[in-house]
Image 1 (spheres, rainbow, N blue to C red):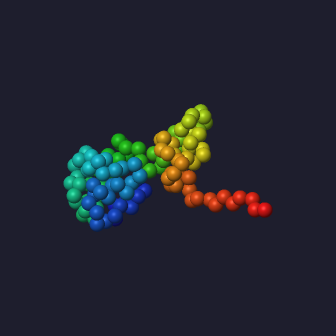
Image 2 (cartoon, rainbow, N blue to C red):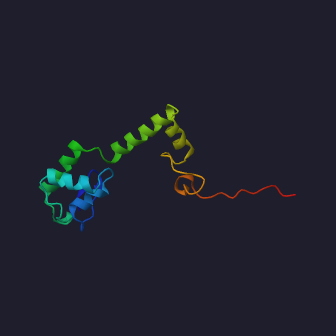
Image 3 (cartoon, helix red, strand yellow):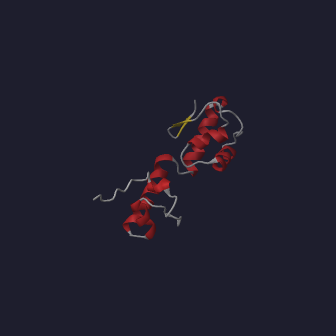
Length: 122
C-alpha cells in the first residue's frame, strides 16, 4: 500500500485516480502529477515500484499544497473574511450560503435541519 503525504492510497485503483484521495488533488492534478513523475497513470497502485512512489511524493511536495497546509490556508482565508467584517465573512459566521444562493427555500445543507417553531397557546 502506497502512503503519500500521510494518506493510504487504495491498492486496486489506477494511480491517477488513487491520488484524488489526497485532499487538494483532483483528477486533472493527479494526471499531471503522474506525467511530471514519468509514471503511467493507468498503472495500479499496488504495482508501483518504490522509485515511482518516491518520484510522485517528490512532485507533490515540490509543487502542490495539499492536506494540512491547504486546510490551514483555507481556514485562515475564511477567518480573515470574518475578521474584516466582509459580507462573505458575515455569511460564513451565520452558517448561511456565501455565494448568493436563495435561502427562502432550499439551502438546507448550510442551514441544517429544520427546527420546529411552536407558537403560544391560549
